[in-house]
Length: 159
Image (cartoon, rainbow, N blue to C red):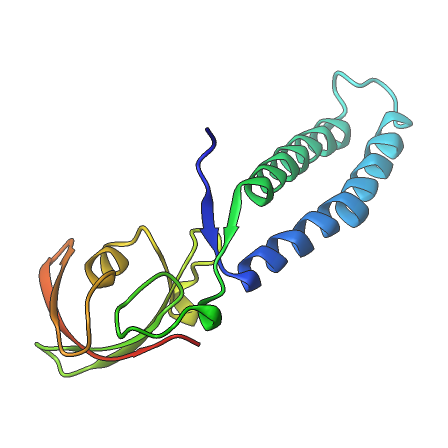
């Protein structure tokens, strides 16, 4: 009934770590901040109190969100999948942009793991959608805001 959320083991552990921090470090600090703000007097005009309550709301919502994702997580360990030369979730793919001859290396990961600075791209990104199911030397077209960009797949790794 619930949709599974694909993620790598690294992404799963990262979410677990964030959840632990929120529950055992951030949440108690917020509770203390609320208690301290209550001591300042009238709650109607107490900016510190309202700020702490808002922070508490964000924290609790994030805790619920992470717990939900961890329950629905489908951990995919790419190293345990036999290499068939096809781009799949978790693959690290080297591509050559045809128009510029620039080379890029991307790892296809879950939404929460995506980090463009680390060249980890979401499974739902246009680049990932173009790469999934392709093989070495295939040419892909990626739709971008400035138009289509063509790439050649140079290397596929399951690492």
